[in-house]
Image (cartoon, rainbow, N blue to C red; front, side, top):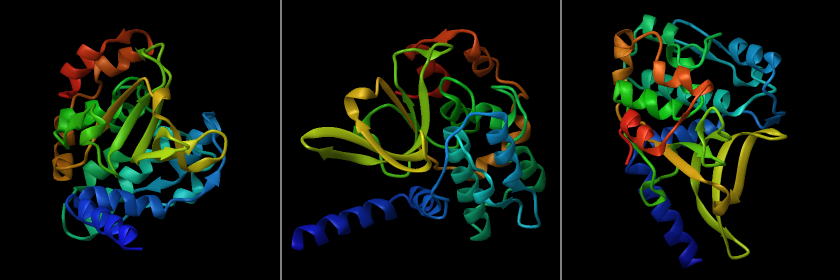
Length: 247
């Protein structure tokens, strides 16, 4: 019992040390469970239907986004985190910035959603462009609540197999190192999942630290050529480091 209490205290201290990560984790708890996984036009339409601008900046009804897919799921958590920060007075995102944040029918690399949804290091590239927080590759630096891009193979871009998730931690199951995360996962949809760490070829983490920089959205080029090209070409880990500031 004492050991359990000690571990719980350590987790509490860790989360309090990074308030934005704690809020990300809180928003996961408000998300639906299940709902099915799909990457169809209907799933994307459902994502668009889940968000609209409002007097508070944005209205999110995540239950409408079903079936769902990974980048849409993590983007909703990102938006819900921003909305909480806005309502608490931590940040003040303008109306035009909120409008630009809405998921939309955008090609990879175009706008905010098109960056987040792109192949390759979409979220990390967005974080780097707007200086929203650090990007890194080491599990040793990772904390629960970090956004994470999993690469299931060694390709980055055209030939990649990837997954957008929120990192929840490392654990052991039957002596096997596991990565635990939340996302929309095959086949059930929204929920937590653990996979053997050995199945993750590459990991790229993005930590939200300076959300107020979203007010600089208007300074972003409409289209990020690097991410737009990820549909047609492969990148390298060296290029990812350069384009995301990751180490």
